[in-house]
Structures are given as C-alpha cells and as structure tokens.
Length: 133
Image 1: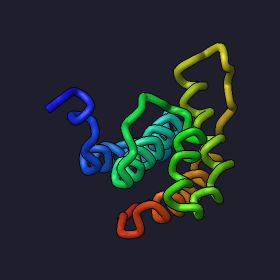
Image 2 (image 1 turned 180 degrees about the vertical axis):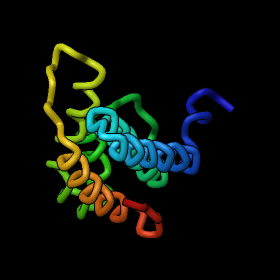
Image 3 (image 1 turned 90 degrees about the vertical axis):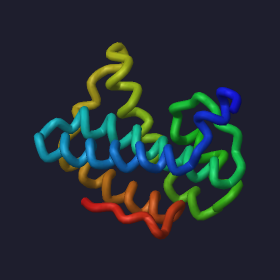
C-alpha cells in the first residue's frame, strides 16, 4: 500500500469527522465558542473529504472548505447552497491557528446556528448519517 492509499479510506475519515463533531458540541457546552468553531471546521472538512473520496476524488492536503466544496459540487449540485457556511467555518480554523488573523469574537449562539446548518450540509452528503445537536 502506498502512502496516499493509507489516507484514502472514507470510513476512517467519517470516524474522525464524527469525533470532531462531538468535540465541537462538547466545547460549546463548556462555553468555548472558539474551540467549538475549530472542531466544527475540522468535522466538516473531514465529512467533505469522506464524501469526495467516496466519489473517487484523489486526496489533497487542503483545509479551505470552500475549495473542497467546489470539488464536491461536481458530484452533487445541491451542495452549492452551503457555500457561505463553508466560507464562514473556514475562518474558524484560520483564526484559531493563525493569531494574526484576529479575534472573530465568536459567540456560542454563532456556533449553535452553524452546527444546525452544518447538520443539513452533512445530511445532504450523507443522508444516513446520524448527528445529534
């Protein structure tokens, strides 16, 4: 097995996406919207990569959700409805990892709203996926 094959199992990506989803909810419960936003981004990124891998996409090292979404729309045009969500959530990753990008002044309400929208996004890619909160 070559190195790229090691990282291309859709089920492995789904497993980690689910774990990050739970981490986002847990951090939200503990009133840490920055951490919740970061793990929300991580979860959505992994769900997108799992979706793309299922479609035959070759794995790329990329964190921008809108760029991943551009790829995903080729396989499901309904996903274009989530473009603004992906742009917003991508900002959570970069704000947490690159302090010069500034404080987003996130609130728990912001993350709760994005979690609900992200749930619809994920269900569009994986209708069978069971997501709580």
